Length: 218
Image (tube, rainbow, N blue to C red; front, side, top):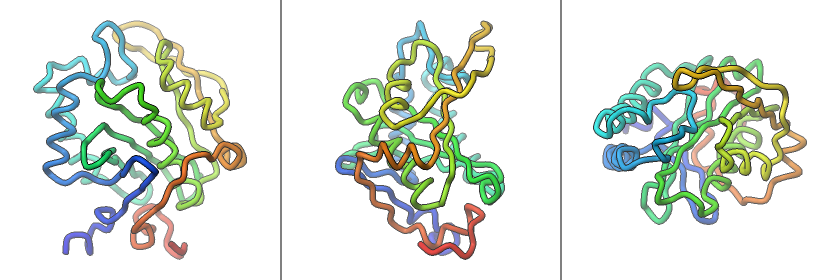
C-alpha cells in the first residue's frame, strides 16, 4: 500500500465537528474549487503571499501545485503538513502546520484558510486547536508561532482564544505596501491552560520519523 511508504496518508485529526487529513485526489480538487470561489473580499487580503489575487482558475491550480510541491520536497528537517479540513465529508478549507529543524527547535508555525461560505462558524478555532494538539501532545513541541495582517480580526480572535501572546512584529510588503505584522507565540504552558477543544490523533506513530522524531512512542 502507498501508506506503507508514505504513512502521513494515514494520519488523521478529529474534533467534535471536524476531520483533518491529507486529501485524496477528489478532495484536493474540491479544495481547489473552493479557493476559486473565493476566500476573502477582493479589497483586502489576509495573506502576506497574495496568491489569492490570481484569477480563479490559476488560484485553483496553485492550490493543487502547492500540495504536490510540499509533499515532494518534505524532509524531516523541513516539513509542511497541509491538512484538508472536512465536516461530514465536505471540504471546508486548509489547515497547515510546519517546522524547520523541528527535532532541535521544537517550534512550529501554522496557517490556514476557509472557503467564504464556511467562515464565521467557529471552524477556524477548532481546526487550529487540532494541529496545536498534534504539535504539542503528539510531537512534543515547545512553542507555536503565528501572525495576522491588520484587519484580519478573525485570525486574531482565534489566536487570543487559544492563548497566544504578542512578541514583537515583522515588516512585510503586501500588494506593494509596507505592512507591520504582529508576531504571536504560544508556549506549552499557555496551550495547556487554553485547551478547550477535544482532539484525537490517529495514525501518528509510523509518521514520527518523517518529523525527525525516531524513537518517540505514538
